[in-house]
Amino acid sequence: MNDFLPLWHIAHRADWEAARADGVYLHSTRGRTLGEEGFIHCSYPHQVGIVARNLYADDPEPLVVLEIDRDALGATKVRVEDVEGMSFPHLYGPLPTDAVVLLRALAFDDQGALMLGDAEDPRDGSLLEETRVGDLLKDD
Image (cartoon, rainbow, N blue to C red; front, side, top):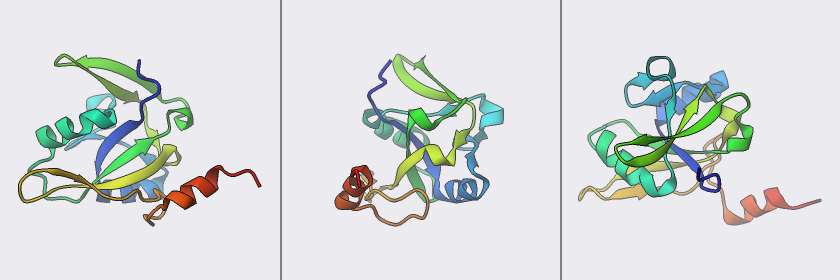
């Protein structure tokens, strides 16, 4: 398993905003919930382009990529499973919103190239600056 790689999940921004109010995110993939699918689809950073192009290229809704802290998942388990010859991480259980450590806007430009926005604080959507992230790691 690639325990050292970040877990990413593509979400509609509106679904993420609603989840923040509830404290838990329950969407699996485009048009399907955790209850319908049985798990939440995730990817590693190097796979997000494949997922985005295959499932979201024609999606008119604003998208974000959620970066998940696997140590903050509580009872939710991560399983890496083969999908068409590639290993993808899946979350078996709900995603606590507190386990999301940052998000980035995701969009396609006019030529279809994938674009990721600057890192945002998942709690309020404010932009995270490198110094701010570093400040979070300082011992006072």
